[in-house]
Length: 310
Ligand SMILES: O=c1ccn([C@@H]2O[C@H](COP(=O)(O)O)[C@@H](O)[C@H]2O)c(=O)[nH]1
Image (cartoon, rainbow, N blue to C red):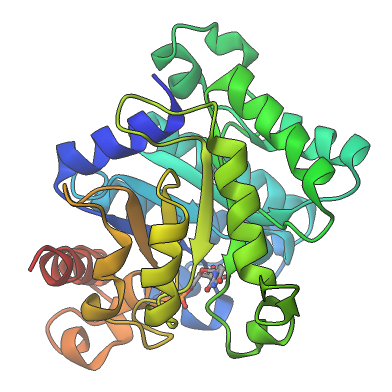
């Protein structure tokens, strides 16, 4: 089974297109976790981040198809943070979730090969494709976010590993941040840069389609650009879309519905802060607060599922 088939099956099984973003931040960690810190060392924080993310995974594992750990917050803690990231990925994979590592990696082709080998391929994904789980990548995620700005030859090593390890990538096409248009909206001949990247994504998927017509090369398109989301869904019919920007960045259910195909699959919508720090949101803080932060995470995830199902 390919990555695209797995993610669509996980969407069908859970009845959800929500991707829970794991973006731990010191200042927003619930009080019980902050209070139990042994000291302020990176090691102590890394342990708290791992506990926080693993508890979130336990709380949402039966109601969402995937999680997206954001590497930056773990890297911020140095080596101890990287160990925590590895533990979080392993915990999510053991819980049966699809793991999209958000690292936005890339480099010249020969170095991209190392990134691809490091991050792409989980034991579960490889086993589902009939391969040897022992060939999984050391980080063990199912997919990785990838920058396209070093060109086609920088993406091809990732495609290669996707083929060998039944993994996926999400290429940055139209990002959710306000400044992304500085480069992505530039005219490039007849079309924009983001349209050119979308064409590249579509061409890479062409010979790799599963039974539902999806390939391993997904695309990141921000919920904050609903018009481009409609346009890019049509331009990349074979790509699973990863749509960040829901919730904290202002994206809402009406903005992202166009990302889904007719069967309600083909995309996952990410929310990080809106879910993982729900204990501090006005709607949930009184009922749950810091003490019941896990219940707030569950409630916020169910709320997002319900909004997206309507
Ligand atoms: O275009 C992009 C690409 C990636 N992201 C990442 O998604 C989450 C969003 O977090 P929220 O708290 O839900 O805003 C975060 O990890 C970003 O780095 C994105 O927002 N936009």
